Image 1 (cartoon, rainbow, N blue to C red):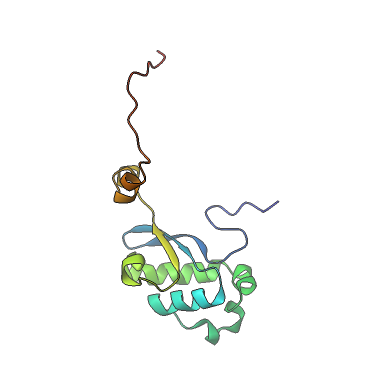
Image 2: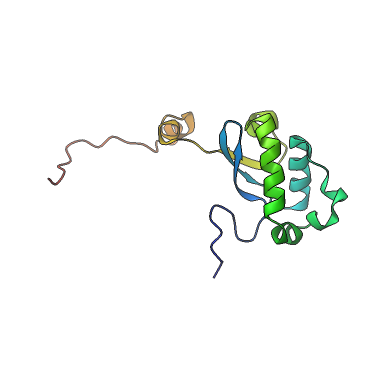
Length: 123
């Protein structure tokens, strides 16, 4: 059984929620190349400088340190990674409030919210 890891993936680092200037974001950089691209985009040193961070297994062992550094960089630059880095290969998602999620164009396009009328609620 995977251990409890809160919002973090148990076997991929980084793949979790990160605080930033404008709220929160979920980032997944599932391999060394993607982690290097993430570092370049947010202004962190290339993982080649710290060889133990090149492999996912190394990042998992020190998960808290890269998280702290990533959050520090995100607080300086905001959370707009998806808009700033189209096609860089990293995956990132803004953490929305319920109203933002319900009102998003993606939610509408996928018809994920429907209105159901005529339901009787128990009193």
